[in-house]
Image 1 (cartoon, helix red, strand yellow):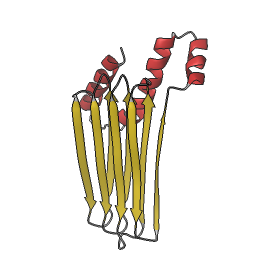
Image 2 (image 1 turned 90 degrees about the vertical axis):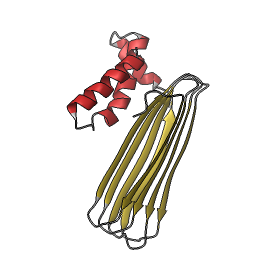
Image 3 (image 1 turned 45 degrees about the horizontal axis):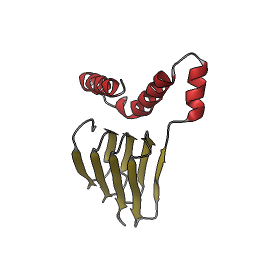
Image 4 (image 1 turned 180 degrees about the vertical axis):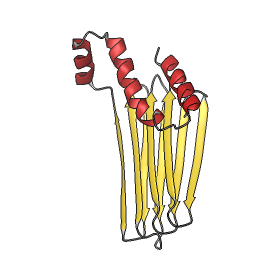
Amino acid sequence: FILSGSLVRNNLTMVLDGEHIESHLNGLYLTNDNQVVDNHTLVDHRKPNCNSNELYKGIIEGKSSATFNGKIYVRKDAQKTNAFQSNKNILLSDDGTINTKPQLEIYADDVKCSHGTSTGKLDADKIFYLRARGLSETSAKKLLMHAFASEVVDMIKIDALREYIEEKIAKRFE
């Protein structure tokens, strides 16, 4: 979770070097001002019957920039691999930038793998719907951003940590 820091770079490598290993990488980055955030991940499937799930989400404000560069590597011997990667982003200003590069490099033939990315602005139809139900435009946007982030935050199993992150996110959306 990246909630502060003017220049932040994360390099994560997961090596699945035994059978029946399961890996989950979940990330959330909220950037603003001139902040720069780079997330680089590698999930290396070396043995068969392993699973990996990767979900990174970002909300980019101001003149900030974020990068997601994730690679899933499935070696020839890693048959029966299930590997999924997703990067989703919301741009809140015209000055912010997101560079996203999800990658699959697969050398096994009995696998289920997918990757994808999406970047866009807050959905105007959803804002309209919430405003029609009595919310202000600001409240509607805050609610949509919180819902977007909650997909990652809700995966935190440690209650105290999840509550701490939720509190930090709520302060950012004030």
